[in-house]
Image (cartoon, rainbow, N blue to C red; front, side):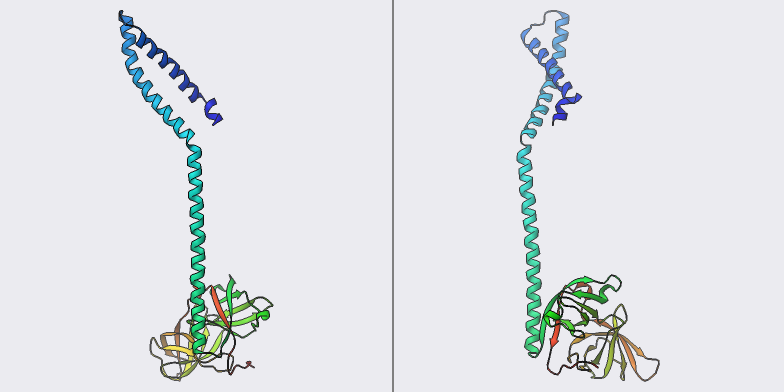
Amino acid sequence: MKQFFRSGGFKVIVIMLVILGGVCVYSAAATPVTPAEQAIAALAVPLQRQSTALTQTVTGFWNRLFHYGELEENFREVEQERDELKRKLVEYEELKRSNLQLKGILGIKEEHPDYTFEEASIISRDPEWGDNRFTINKGTRQDVQERDMVLVAGGLVGRVEKAGANYAVVTALTDPNFQVGAYDNSTNYLGVVSGNGDSCEIRYLTQEPEEGALIVTSGAGGNCPRGLLIGSVKKSEKQKSGTTYAASLEPVIDLSRLTDVMVLTGFDGQKEEP
């Protein structure tokens, strides 16, 4: 503001106001009788108009200047209201997510009362492996152990590969190192599901599966319970052996959207894999 009062533009405004004021006073007090005075009077009319316009402009400027503090205060209040709405939206989304997670757990427990869970949140993803590997915020202190299965209400997610005191690394079912016994839910023919980096597939089926058939865990090995949904058949073909079939699967879980999971820490019939 100090720079404005020191600027050349401000000085010009002051000078014009003084000149126009003098002209206006002169034109109001004097009665033009000579040609020169008549010329001055004629000149005063447009100058008076310009003076009026300039006065309105300056008045508007001062009004805005004196109300700037009020406008700034209103702006701060609007910003505070916006931030509060953002905070409430985050709280709402968190509550909704927690409710969905709780409903999922309750649903699984009603169907499988022998299951014991440890809820966990994903805290990081391995940039080298993308969605195929991630780290959760629970570990051995919360009874999370290596080879525990990881799931959500919709189905199987993967398996604990490494467990620290307060964290665990999970290998997703799309990881090439992941394998689990499975079967075609419509025919009960057994196979093995493994990851291929982008998705997963089932192999060693003795009968060709239909498109859309559901593939679920078989419980083979005793470390994974029977009946966890893995995905659905997209496309099948005979394997090189000529006696079995393989099929690409559409995982039931969108791994890229996962934020929370459940670690299956125990179930009836569980035993350690050799």
